[in-house]
Image 1: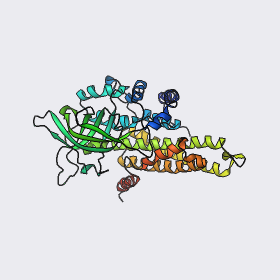
Image 2: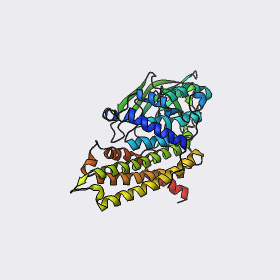
Image 3: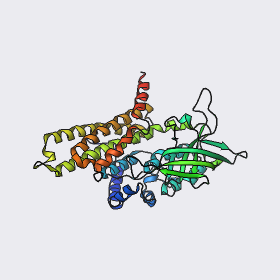
Amino acid sequence: MRRTVFDEDHETFRQTLRSFIKAEVLPVHDDWYAAGQVPRDFYYKLGELGVFGMSVPEEFGGAGVHTHKFLAVLSEEAERAGVLFGCTGAHVLLSLPYIKMLATDEQKKRYLPKFVSGEEMWALAMTEPGTGSDLAGMKTTAKLSEDGTHYVLNGAKTFITGGVHADRVIVCARTSAPREDDRRFGLSLFAVDTKSEGYSVGRKLDKLGLKTSDTAELAFADVKVPAEDLLGEENRAFGYLGRNLASERWGIAHNAYAQAAAAVRFTQEYVEQRTVFGKRVADFQNTGFELAACKAEVDAAEAVTDRALESLDRGELTAAEAASAKLFCTEVAHRVIDRCLQLHGGYGYINEYPIARLYADNRVNRIYGGTSEVMKMIIAKDMGV
């Protein structure tokens, strides 16, 4: 079936990315993998390539294209090559929607040009030690000074993607006590400058996968945040967070699909070259059956994520639909990558092979952005059961 979600501009971008990956990423990606992060100057290259500014208005240095399709192409090409673009997703998919939705014109003038160029990398800091997905239970506080010029930020965050290299972090903190009838009241968002006194990066967490995407712990000790860096209105952050979950979950779903498609590609190449008992692994009937089953699942995931992408671009993707896409695509990727690793035999367990890295990278898809169990709860509630 011919794919119709992308047009000529998207395919031109795809070819540009493919050439960029071949020249700038593949020769050094193993070094990044060993280091556990990409070099800081790599983000400047992505800025020059236009990756960060696709959906940023032209007046702030972007392309002004209001679509997630270029991000979809980016995900597909990176996974196809078996590479990661560091914390690009945290910068563009997680952080940018809050700037576009909540920032004043003055804030956009300050934030977006540096965002587009890669001069300022952004991250999103919500999760705290001990609270997990329960944002209403967070302990980080931001108290307004008596003269109203700044907030004093205290607390800690964990599992922050891009936290090591971030120049600005959107921090969620409690500015008011929760109401008796609403635990979610009292949370606010701040665009915190990581060079501020009292701001510190703790451990760079050693993860199972996603090795070139740094994840860190953050701490705030009496950090002064200028009042003009409050994003949106005080005490309304929980509602803001909910409005961006659909795009975040679509992003995870689409990346999972891209990982599954890459796994099939890597495995087909491997079994066509590998010989066992005097014949190619590809020549065994079981190999053909396994790859065919995987390809059918990938085709189904592609249809689901493409439909969700079109709906997202129209502003129509509901929370339940996004949850359904994430649940389906991440579960498909889990099954497909596991079966593809099996076809690699012992070599599939060696990190030198992309299928091993995919196996580790993929596992978190069913956890972050809301676990598979939470996705089922959302879908069931939407069904009325």
